[in-house]
Length: 381
View: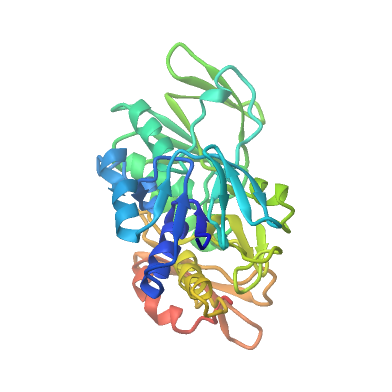
């Protein structure tokens, strides 16, 4: 019997590869292994589901059993993969040893955690999957105040959503502004004012160092000694690609699992995509890059080696208080930002010395210009 194509991970990356592969090959044996219950959901929806009153059960779109039937796949849920043997082409999991013909790593990323001290440090929550959302949703009661650690994309989306749901929200970050890696200063200030007008409280230039349990909720102390209180503390510092399994198998690792433009790792017949993968120095944990990678990889798995290419892929920040579209320039790109405030919005264009558009940030009314500027941007890869 032919060994199956094995996919480790049942998130957007893994399931989209499976779906795209099934469009091309309906008979190849396919096994999907996941450490959770395998329910498929839209991960981006986690950061804007509180105000809509969505429970984890309501966010789950398809249970594993239904996916297994749709994909004609063996679906192994609640499985822990402990080892990959690239020479023998096997993986070891909690249910035994499984052979593979081709292996796809789509096991995502881990939330980055600050080195917090204090009696409440272990109670700080992160929301990076449906199970963690369920815990957060269960603990969050009406009227509770929330402290968010991190003013990046996810932190700001949660801040906007929680505030819209009626919660007092304070956001802490070492950076001088929100979305510090995505927005230049002037439009960053515009974004901050828009969320502050919605009731979000920002604390920049500092970070939380200590979290202690209090009579009600938690007492937070910043690195510079300021004190705050909150009923719940949510960490949204960022994500670190899950590389431990790949590293133990001897695969090349940098920031993520290093792959070429065929998404092949340093081992034959082993591929990676999504939040865990690094393609030519790029780690892009967003929907559009994942979809592009999944389509290309499915063709390669089906016997048609296909190079991955990334078009310009502006990212929508889900902050209704300030609709925002960002497409940052490539790291190290030569050029400068041109920023301007417009009526009910702000616009920033990153241009090369010869005037070519290399990046943009469109806020408020300017976010409606997404297609205009996306058409002028160069491909990412």
